[in-house]
Image (cartoon, helix red, strand yellow):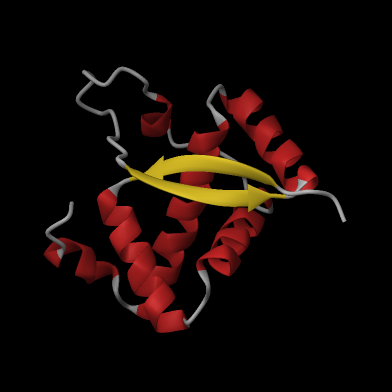
Amino acid sequence: MAKKKSSQYTVTAALKYLQNEVLQITGYTKTMYQYKALAYFLSGDRKIDDRLKITARTNPLYVHRDVRDQIYLDPVQHQEIKKVAEAEGVKISVVLFQAVLNYTCIQANLLGITGRIINNDNK
């Protein structure tokens, strides 16, 4: 089996909160959840939201991400994510953030917990 490579990425506090809510309800491990998010993203349109492409922190549309997370990618996953990053003109960490964001929003909607983010003090 090929050695997995560690990658770090950052997310918003609100996304992390919602992801933790989904994990608590579903009972998924964080690793399983991340792999499902990647699989879902890579099987879809592989597009990065324009706001996530903004790098100037002074831009009012810049998405501030301040919570670090880590994932271990096998070589195939890493190559696929690298291809998306190059095609979209972003770093790998942005692709990972988009994958987790997409999957978390879908899961939260299916579980009926999208409104919980409004009451989170860690926005």
